[in-house]
Length: 143
Image (cartoon, rainbow, N blue to C red):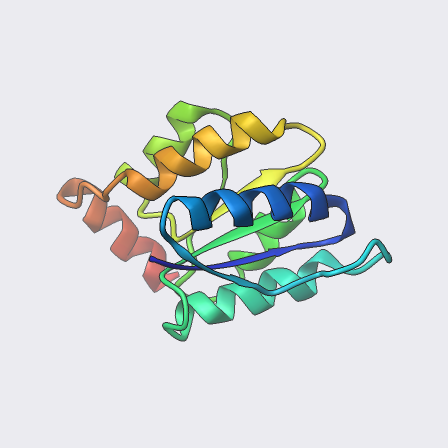
């Protein structure tokens, strides 16, 4: 799977760990930045990753900021994006099964690297169930 990943300055350490982990799982990962510790606007990186997903350059996306909230709000402004702030393993699975989330968001200040890896792995392996959930996703797309 091709994955686009981005973070602001608050998520660089977690981003690096998740890039390495996703590649170990056999995925192709495009690092969309940021690349240094200088303060940047999370909105810029959310838009870059979201556009890669909607343009078909990536199948899924990963976004990281301090809380994960800004990234998820920003990414969800892009038509066709269903970004989910994932705070435990069950939510990681449900965001795929029920919502067909195509971007996962992490709050670097609220998750350790090993927990983030577990959540990411679940999210990447979980399929969308469709059915009644497809009807709901279709309604979201019309908004």
